[in-house]
Image 1: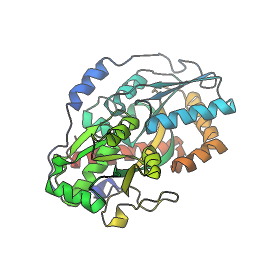
Image 2: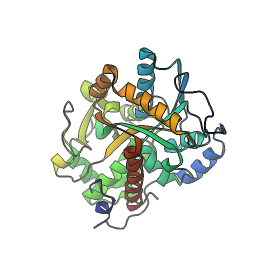
Image 3: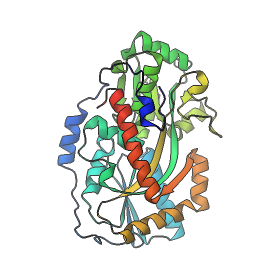
Image 4: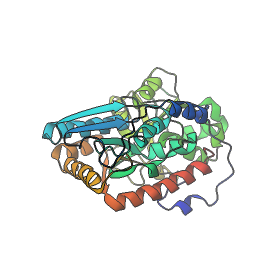
Length: 343
């Protein structure tokens, strides 16, 4: 199964599937959203400007991909003096939906950004969250990250073919850990199972709030397989603690010595884009100021070095083109999630 840019291309020839493991995600989301912090500011010019104080909401626990990007933005703006004061606030839960609900309620806040991307789009569909990215203000796409599937170094699963064979024989026997229900990691595991001819409805998927927890689960023996962004497993791959079975990029990525799934004759690829959005109800001046701030960050040597170090693909985009991208990507991820039985 290939996650192509065209929504229609993912729909042909798909078998009927039972729902993937949801673990009460819809009920949990409703409960958590109900107690989410409400921080309503009326008026289009509510809140301080981002040059005075910048609040960065990370809708996940510390240690994951969103947290890394948010704190790197904070580091750049602090080092360059672009902003007087910055604060990163972690608001984990329901694949980012709790953080999203909070930001949706911060109407008119021109001093606030939230990390987002493919993970959140999939989780919104899977959990039945009441909000999506059309409810906030798109600011900038920053980069693409790619998922990697790994196993412990001493695992009897030696390569991708071994994993697919195990799934075909007994899907429930393989404990797979990754990010939130419906997120990129979950989607990728389901797509691989489907392409292998196994039923994704049998996926034994264990969601974690942050990438650090998934790494720990893999290393302590509670997981057979880990799925996450390459940067979150890169240290363990390089140290030999885990073995990488495949990368979700469409083509080989410079600096990453892991074969893509397509190179192994498994027609699966999925990009995890990372970006930032702001609360709804911003004036054009507020939106432009936030976009200009992200353009400054993007132009620094520090940020470009981070892209290279983390193996992120530079896909920077702002303005109306980014807004159109969000609309198209929302439709695409929704369709993939529905076809995998997540909706």
